[in-house]
Image (cartoon, rainbow, N blue to C red; front, side, top):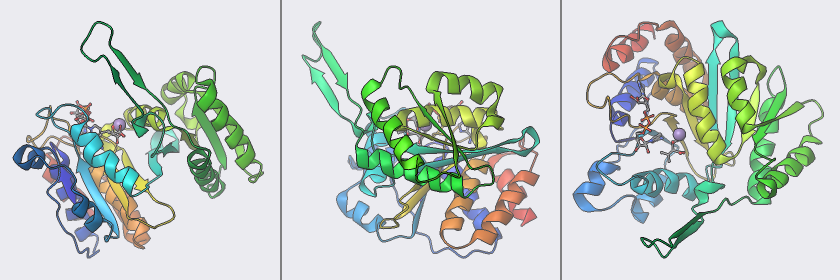
Length: 320
Ligand code: NAD
Ligand code: IPM
Ligand code: MN
């Protein structure tokens, strides 16, 4: 358990409460990681802590990042470091809003792209300053996430996979993604495919999200689109995610899509459903699929979201 910053500890507490109410006994260990620790002793994610994390079956995380620390220090040093070091190359983000007919998943590449951190400054702080920020796309990295998305699409009733990119401008990375999508796709004749440029995908997310079944996209587009996905399917407080290592060499990490929400932290105003649904995804992986399904049903039946964070957790737990 890594509660992290802001509303993170508030929402993971409710997730754990609900898991226990579902009758699943988890042996948990709390890790003090995030902004508070960094401000206390200057450490973010020491190597021995990272090694310790490798020994767990799963990681449940709230959110990280605080206005007290410059942007990116904790986000890169903790969250991205774990995603990369544990090679959690799939970021799986489901969106459902049954009444509206919305039911799709975004498979976000989670270890490459602009997130790899390629770039730097020249002549920093001078009028001639140059900042570059590259995008890393390896054939191996692109292929493995696209293959995961095809396998996922093949397992669903609609069997439809859309790739989202910006091939009309990002002609190098886009070309690699497009070729890989076509080549891997030839192994899945049962899956129908589509392609959207990311700007058009923003229109469709708002006006016609029902068209989507599974989407595969690069790291940054997936980051942006999944906040939008949350907003159009009930709100960001419902959006769950799993950072997966499908090979299971390392633990996967489950967390809500949202951040630490400093604007509402400490006020018991956060919606804990996203964290609870992330814990349900974790239970699927831990072999507790039946409990996970009961938790999802209990969340769907919990409609009074004007209540406080612990009250919402209590209401979901009571249904279990
Ligand atoms: P945010 O997602 O924290 O907040 C955006 C808006 O959504 C805010 O108005 C917030 O109050 C609202 N919101 C978020 N979660 C909510 C919930 N569960 N219930 C009700 N309202 C909710 O995004 P931000 O403000 O851009 O980022 C704040 C910090 O969080 C930054 O440091 C950022 O880097 C970090 N962040 C961390 C993660 C993560 O740990 N996975 C994800 C996104 C942002
Ligand atoms: C997310 C977050 C992270 C990301 C940040 C905090 C590094 O926004 O999980 O969506 O950009 O991946
Ligand atoms: Mn994000």
